[in-house]
Image (tube, rainbow, N blue to C red; front, side):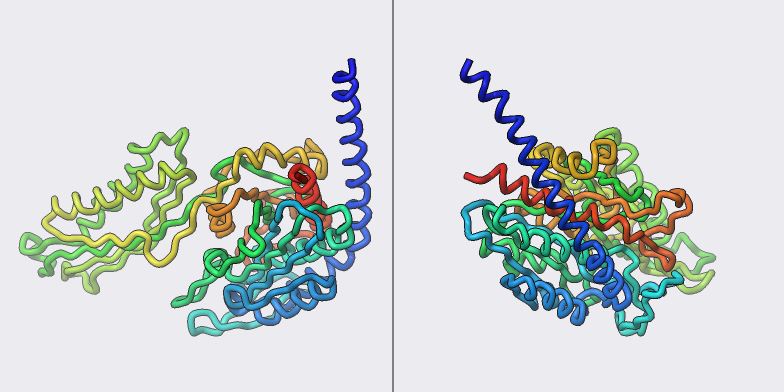
Length: 433
């Protein structure tokens, strides 16, 4: 009888505690919403390119210091990291936002549109937050403010990570999450879990989308150089033709996905994005160069594609009397953005409670990539999509990410602040040993 009474009382108490906490989080997020919007507008108007986020970092660091947080700057060149210490034992929860803009000319008619210019690989280019990183920073600043004001309810520490160069470092440089991890961003204090949100111009405001396991693809760029024998185009029998070799290679590489992977389980992409060889209609060249990208959503598929690429490139080159060099990966690669299944199952109820069960959507994985994956290689992580599309805009009319017309509505950010805050609070409460 006594055991049964406890079983009934504890859930009721838990629900009551959640309700009180949610009410406070909602009030604090509402109180700061105008500031979050203001921060977003400023950051949008003054974007900076990857590894060049100097003024952005100053702006973010100044705000974090105003909260009396322990702030570190210059991480991975321009990154900013702040720690909120509750003074009580508990886990270390990391929250991450990316900071860089893109070399894209903004075409939106906004009072806070970007007119900024920057240098990209030696050329002067327009700069725009064409992927929503301005909203990511503003939402994380909002979550930092709310969590700081709720410090007495925390158990453990919160690490706020503002990361540069998610879009990729300039040629000849390294950057982004990979470098932040190398420089110890998940250490001192050691991070137990990490959460991240990405705004989506294709998902309705008020929604949160997620997937368990492989969520965004690993990225593995590659280069193939085929060496043949040059000859006059009228006498092809005197050549070892790298162009026909390349043609056979391109078609064969597509069979890795269509014939070697169990595609109902192992979605993957092998794309040749560029091919160069020859300079005249009547000369068979001695060399062809191809570059491309591989996208995979699980480790077994990734390993298989690596093996199959090497096998096919060598085999086809040998069969044509040519030689070939495969460079894989080429200059960078991203792991799979992998949402830890146990963590996802544990935390999705928090998201459902915050956004609403009908607004929390199990989505299919995508073959785009995110360097949030470097954190998830080291600690369990959960990465989700936050809706930013106005409800009165049809999906087909919503501009795509990385385009001059890209737009997400300010109204979506309050939910992002609440989700980041509640994930932190609930994780800490569940691990308050």
